[in-house]
Image (cartoon, rainbow, N blue to C red; front, side, top):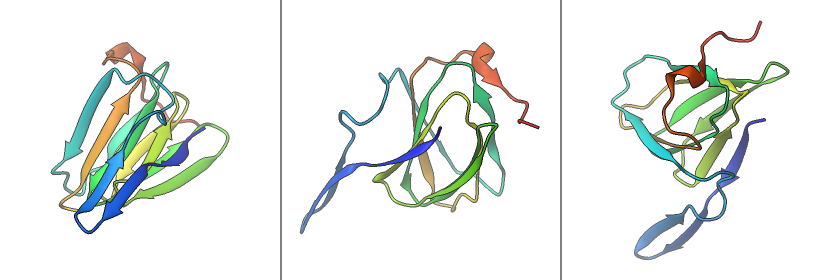
Length: 121
């Protein structure tokens, strides 16, 4: 089931430094980011195998998750907030601010056969 991880951040007069180290529950095999999104909805799928960790490193967006038993909604609005999505988490991403950059770390390389597009009933 999806969950939020608060990433360790060091702050001082020079600014902030956020570290992603030993907190992601998988070996990172792929990184991609989504930006320049208009009022579109992204995602609309779950996976057979892939685990994902989503971090909105600039701006904000919302993510709706459904694991077939319960639903959850999250607002990613800080670069130290990470949402872990497990394979059973059917999800959509929406309400991107114009400046939003959503970075996603994944446990698997891209495989079109890993995607399940049908939502739960």
